[in-house]
Image (cartoon, rainbow over the protein chains, first blue to last red):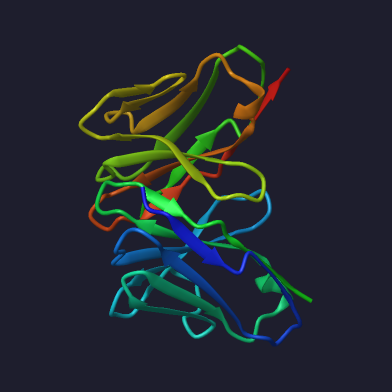
Length: 115
Length: 112
């Protein structure tokens, strides 16, 4: 399966700061990557589907102007949480889609804490 | 859209016993069903998956069964070990869109 690298693993910052998270597919050209958010003791909730060379597809209720996604190459997608607030504190995790009816492979996740 | 339910939410078993986790899905168009294991603070890792053209799949101590008619699928872990303790998530996908809908998770504790 794909090897997925996600950075940073941990971010602690003040309210109002914008935070960028990178997701890299190290050995697979990923036309599709996914961004999830996971609150403590809860499931993975899909935020958006990142498509290489085109606009991301956001799930209902996810603000596209707050969670900016860029997928400029087949190996890199970025998620920027703009003007983060304490309620944005969560575990953000990306995955690489291997194709239809195929597994997704996940990065290590980013734990974001907004003070 | 797709809705995936998962039961039980927590499960405790004695080491060596079997564990069964069940999931149901709502969309008959779903055709791919992976299971992920997630240890605390770590990435979800694929442990087994099944496609809709297969009724059962086994990999050593882990097996998955699928009933398309009833729209449910189950994870079976035999001879459980303490290192099996984790949260397990099922998911359903329609394949073409690659999107997964995850179940709420089952926290499995294997007691020594």
